[in-house]
Length: 446
Image 1: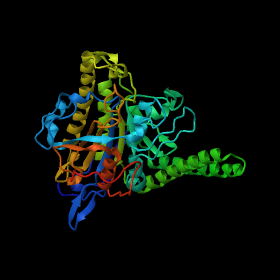
Image 2 (image 1 turned 180 degrees about the vertical axis):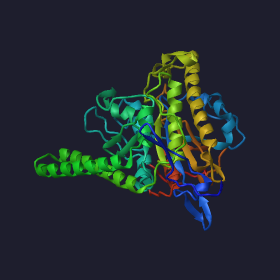
Image 3 (image 1 turned 30 degrees about the vertical axis):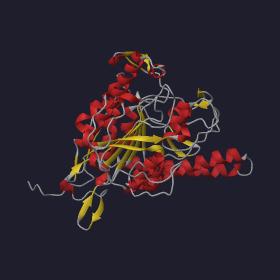
Image 4 (image 1 turned 120 degrees about the vertical axis):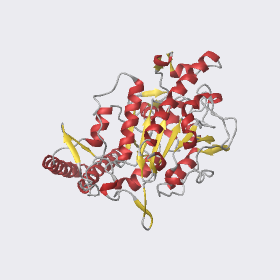
């Protein structure tokens, strides 16, 4: 057998209604998704992920005492010891738009909705929601046409998209991190089975073509019917209708893009059956799926909400039977703070699992983690105080060699968190003058 024989990138394993394709192999030749760095040299694309944990941290057990490279990991970060050279702890960043600014209570709702947007959410529990475009959706709008999915939004806790969840704020704010526009939140998918199907399930070509033709004709009919509404609806309804057709256009573009892209390339992986009863297994399944999506270049940007902001989930499997949110209002009770530390440490251990998976996959001359930037943190700092400055933020991955890792970097107080997002955008060749409340690109990372 000629080991140098080329294998088609369209090679897939078919069965049970799914197309499970191979990852990129050297015998397939240069990976089409990769871009030229220098003539004759190939460079993998950077991927961005934003991982959110609720209710802040026990900051005394999160923040390193020393700055620079010679720092010791505090107790919450101990699960990351073997990966210390692969991430930076960033201290001093602020989500100013999560603060009340005259709107009173609702810090949990504001914390999540402002985390990636840097925009003050409108206080409402009705349908007139408003926040801002999130950084992941900026990426999706600029480079999403290069992959089968423009972005991926996942989580591990279901939540309502309507009603009052936090002091007069709609539940959508507490449960949603990703916003396509100021008025278009993107709900996360919490069922691993459905995420898997979205990423990798397929149909025979004839069935897919027939389905796409049917969908196109239906969309055309919807558009034609809607013409009769012009001049008969309010400006608010017109806005909603415009957003609706924007969504339709997005579907059309995805259909067109899918028809031109090669088959999805992913390693063999057992299809999940549904939402696991074990929270730990749920998180790790979602981590696996995100890794597969990046490895196969199905998408280059993802958001992952481990639990909704204000979540009162108990953690009996680590000896914490009380609810997370209740414990976060510890009133400086040392026993409660110790339990918060244990919850925080558990979440960090799941991040360690993700980094281990990314590092285990070779890509070019490095690993998949080397070509990622994984931002992990919360829009609350101390959950007891509901403060939004000095946030617990960690940035993992080398961004294709553009990030110096292994550091604790302390920034000036009130440095906007969105400055970090601008720096991450720059690593995927998306450059904006500002995003939300940013004041410039975050320094100290190169």
